[in-house]
Image 1 (spheres, rainbow, N blue to C red):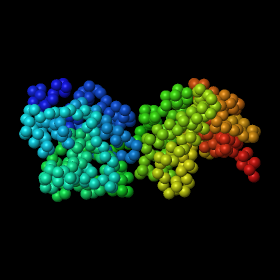
Image 2 (image 1 turned 180 degrees about the vertical axis):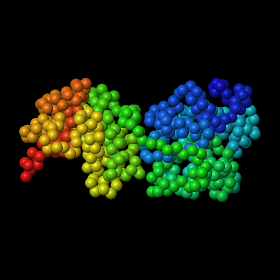
Image 3 (image 1 turned 90 degrees about the horizontal axis):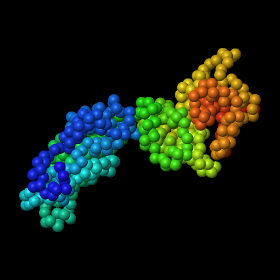
Image 4 (image 1 turned 180 degrees about the horizontal axis):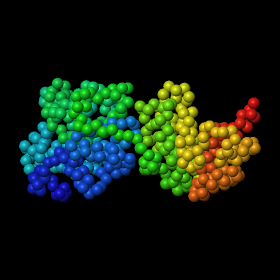
Length: 487
């Protein structure tokens, strides 16, 4: 159908245009994508066998949908991607405030215009990108915001009574007729507003200032909610919940590999950052493991969740830390270092809700604890496990390295050390080099230095070495030697 040649209602009838509800649009276009083996929700990862099949079933069933999950689980992203399942263009009565279907008008304006002009009624076209409306539910949202109110100025100008539907100023929902309408954080909406919503979902009735107006709106509602909200801030009233066809539970990535794909896709990085900074795969694994540790941490409120945005912003901070050092040293390229992970602490502290014990310890302490826990979790994937209890005369692969620190006065690693000096310092620890060669022989040369630092941090976390922060960087020492020297 060539919309450029369809200017009025008569043209629309000649080409045999048939009205279709928005739910049928979504359903029919989804069926085509499923038949063709196309991904209807491009850019969503980790939901292939859980959330997406349930969402597709809900669309095929023509349901209004509630996406229930913790923050940072792509609920709003899923709703926005539904726009791609709409027809590219649809016709509407020109000048209509509520996108009247030319063949099924519902407003007084559209009906009067068709009655006066017949087939000469002008038609305009709406692109699918204009058919998405979103509202964050907050306690101050009113019925007038969402549904509408009587406009006294319009009533005075037209010399009409308040009971006349022509004096209504339409709210967001009527203006989103024939569109996808998303209400985020639904439980935050006052109960009386929710009651007004379920009447629209069930009957298509709008009640403004006591005047009942029959408007059979054609809408696809998508709601999002956080399980925490049901107890902390509000709840979805039962009659409204009963009228939402499908409630779909979202979740966090179930593996580090999926989490890495999401972070890489969503991180806002300058191309030059990607070009000048070499990031080992181990560093990416460690970054995602921090989020996994946070979701299990005793210091963090599990009901609040740990958003995927934490890993995304932490990755951005991680690269910026390395970039800042390279700029200071006048280097055109640099290696990401383990010490750069101290730069992600602000991203962690701003993204987690601490329980009482976490508040007592402090956000920065909890962030460092998460980094340490992530190191301990990943360590056995690269090196022999360190047992908590060992026989006094038992030998371990790390004895020579621990002995090296015992005999030395300590090993300092300044944060802003140029790359050449950084490499030279780490290469000076012979037992460390031997461990990398023995247990990670296939490692790329540029990845070895991160792995060396990783091993040192792991020995600290397993209480084999000590680590202290000084003004310009970190110092690693023998655990007991440093203790004795402090006596």
